[in-house]
Length: 228
Image (tube, one colour):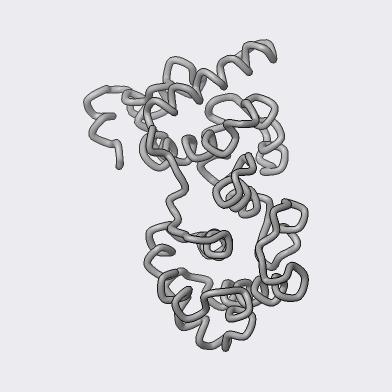
């Protein structure tokens, strides 16, 4: 789609408004009560589903409710509890390491700055932005697999580098919308714009999408594909 930077910005913001209307309940789908719980849950969510993480974290936080408890946890016990989320050995090390780092460097509290969050074990920019946006109200763009796929399909970026995508989407969307725009894209990716075959015929932004028609275009069949 050949368009000026201004036209691209206007189209991106129009898409975001349409997705807001389609998904008024868009939100973080990880269960959490505190910034620490969200931080740990987001680390655990790598390469598994939010549903599986939500089924696992209640026992985790009942047994180890704060950073000091996680830092002192027996690794074998952590691995046993985290076994259902996959890659449980590496994740157990990250969780214990997060607890230790928070105790040693941040007084047991989750820091509110991205540059501090990304120094924690297993925490990258994606996880940091999830925590900042949803626990502290600091706008951030979360570039997960859905956001990357949709931003490419929508013609907002041609990059595969999450850091570049984050910057390019940040330039297109209003800063105050960054967190919610991420949720909307993730909801859309999980419910309509699927990786293998998007439901183009039931997509609210098809008229604004240069990739429209790459999936199921029949409205009835596309509607039957929708999830959620």
